[in-house]
Length: 222
Length: 222
DNA sequence: TTATGTTTCAAACATTCGTTTGATAGAGAG
DNA sequence: CTCTCTATCAAACGAATGTTTGAAACATAA
Image 1 (tube, each protein chain N blue to C red):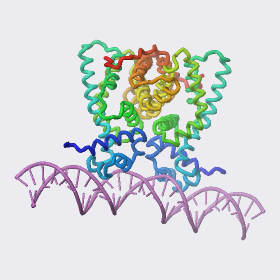
Image 2 (image 1 turned 135 degrees about the horizontal axis):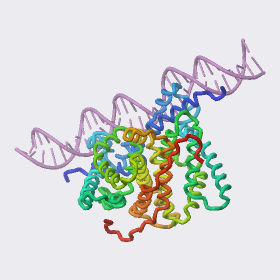
Image 3 (image 1 turned 60 degrees about the vertical axis):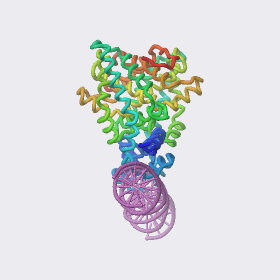
Image 4 (image 1 turned 120 degrees about the vertical axis):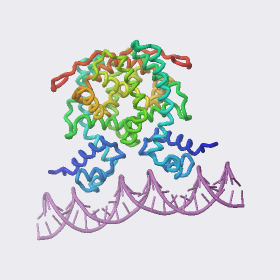
């Protein structure tokens, strides 16, 4: 086999451990130990720990971003300039996530957790990498959301878009823990796709909520 | 002055640096260096780095949790068993946040950022500490939300509650960055209270959104 | 077989980390 | 003053980190 399985064993193990403990809290020795490869293998194959982290993301995000791009092409072709409803945009996006073949044996939830970590734990190099690499696709998506909710004032839409992102990323990044609680308390086995399908009505309703009356006064708001 | 200002200089500096870079990424040497106190001062006054982190949270959360408790007392007394509308619960909660006198010169947004970090970066000891210390008040709040949305199925409400938390914590914890973007792109100076007041209609609408149809089938969701 | 390029390995390197130590200075009480 | 308790300080400690090294093992092709 041309590509040694050392590389993929490192990637698989790193991915799992990063999702469990975070990036700084996972040492190369823990990774290589659990993956049963030599410590130096990481630096040999990837160059540095930072590069390994980026490689873990790239394995998911590279195929995912081209997939999303295609879906958006398809959507724009189908609607041919007509306004695309927000829930259609979101459903397309999320079903792309759900139906993506996972590059690893780890499920979707691990990837979701990684995305959440990337956003909150993002230290300089990571944020820059994600932005440079996948920024355009992301902006194309937010533009679609923008057009799908053009009745909102610009500032309001800006904030609601981030409320939406927050609800999604936050619950995805704590997904494993939340799933366990839900299963224990309500005896219901919740799959990732179920959570996502619960998420869509929530954010769709949020996006089309009545506008707030912003109090200009600065005294108490009782 | 009985209490040396070494303690508060450490707390102030640690708080700022934690919010900027996270806990693991902030070393005691960076903190003590910037606070212009001796390195050993942290271990002398707090005992350990973990204890310092908890102290940073306690300075905010101790007064805040008693405040919230009082507000909930007030609310229950006022409604006297009658159902309390969700937006009233949320407004009470958020206005308690807004009107809390900050224990430091740092604004609300630093505290929000810390809360977000605590939730996502929380490893063992931190999560346990927050749960032991402030769990009861938190559960009382979620119980109020539960009663204010009793028409929802339990599982659905569980997830929506966390969508709500996600939207709040996420946007609050990225608030500094988002405020800058909003100001630059839309020329509008947005205050923390404005964001919160935008948030309330969003999550209120989300909580009362129509129920999703959960697809039992596992094929494509087009 | 020999030669060449790639991969693995144990060991060490250079930093950085949180923590501890022991000496020094200061304040307040008797 | 003397004794005692508290706070500060420079210095060091031991452990853990990411990275590098140089030799050994392996594979591939001439």
